[in-house]
Image (cartoon, rainbow, N blue to C red; front, side, top):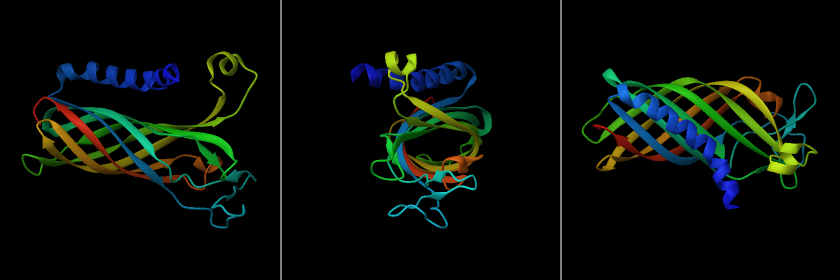
Length: 216
């Protein structure tokens, strides 16, 4: 289990570290943060699977709303002159969901975003984070496969990948020194998300705790 957890978090942590280290030299400020939240999306207009909010897509595939569950968030930003900067975030469902309800196929969405950032200040301790950018969603559907990745490395899943655009906002408050709390909301428009889910439009609501490197 320990090896699995280390492997699971090694890739996103490496991306965050490379992003921060590659940008801090010319930045005036950097932030690193971790948090959690949940997803909100619309249900099927005409649910066809008893006891669920799932339905059928135009191609006849079962689709369910991409909502609920606990999502983890890991990210970092670098801020340059006039409080503009760039950010990279990874969000993923903390535990595997069951597509279609109990007993359904295990799955897990992961969302990766690259955003422009603007950080207006409201005072010494408070400010806003405004985001907008692009990324992709990779939804993993789990199940045994007779492949080397599955048999030898435990990567027993197939991925459905879709391009996305996103916007969002958060209110940060410095609670102690350079440490801040940030309630936030993000909107994702995921292209062709209807291949797997009921809507291309998904919201994430949650909060992060972070630390500022440099002047707040």
